[in-house]
Length: 234
Ligand SMILES: [Zn+2]
Image 1: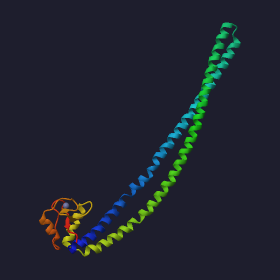
Image 2 (image 1 turned 180 degrees about the vertical axis):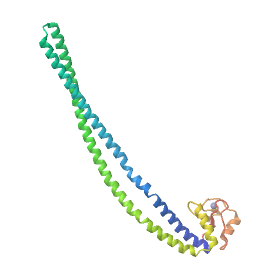
Image 3 (image 1 turned 60 degrees about the vertical axis):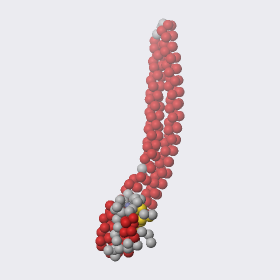
Image 4 (image 1 turned 120 degrees about the vertical axis):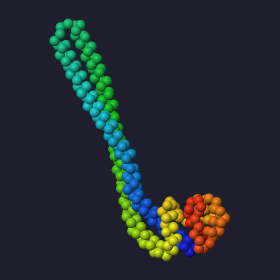
C-alpha cells in the first residue's frame, strides 16, 4: 500500500470524526427540541381534561339557574291560585305546577349527573397534572444530561482539529489536496478499498488495468465510477 494512502486513511478517520462532531454540535438545538416535545402530548391531555372540567362546572351553574327559575314559576302559580275563585282555573294551575315540578326533578337529575362529571373531571385533571409533572422531571433530567454531554463537544472538536493539522502536514501535498476535494464531495469516505476487483465504496467492477494501477505503491488511482481513491489491502 502506498505510504500516502496509509497516511490518508489515518487522516480520513480523523476527518470522519471531525465531521461527526460538527454534525452532533449542529444537531444540539434539534435534539433538545425533540426531548422537550415529549411534553406536548401531556400538556395537551391536561388542557383537555381542564376543558372538560370547566364545561361540567358551567353545566351545573346553568342547571341551577334553570331550577331556580322553575321554582319561582311554581311560586307564581301558587300565588295565582290564591287569587282565583274558579275551580276549573285552579285545577288548570295545579296541572301547571305538577308539570313544572316534574321538570325540576328532571333538571335535578341532570345536575346530579353534572356533579358526578365534575368529580370525574377533577380526578382526571389531577391525574394529568401528575403525569405532566413526572414527565417534566424526566425531560429536565435528560436535557441536563444531554447539555453536559454536548458541552464537551467543542473541546473534543478542537482537539481533533489540532490532531488533523499534524497528520495532514506529513502527507504529500498533491495527494492531500486530491483527497481533500474528494472527501468534501463524498458523504462517507474519499478512499475505497479494492475488493475482488470491485470498488469497495460504489461496488462497481473495475477494469483489470485499474486494479493493477491501484496495486502500485506510488500511483494515484481513482475509481472510474465514483472517483474515490483506490487502494489494495496489504
Ligand atoms: Zn467507486
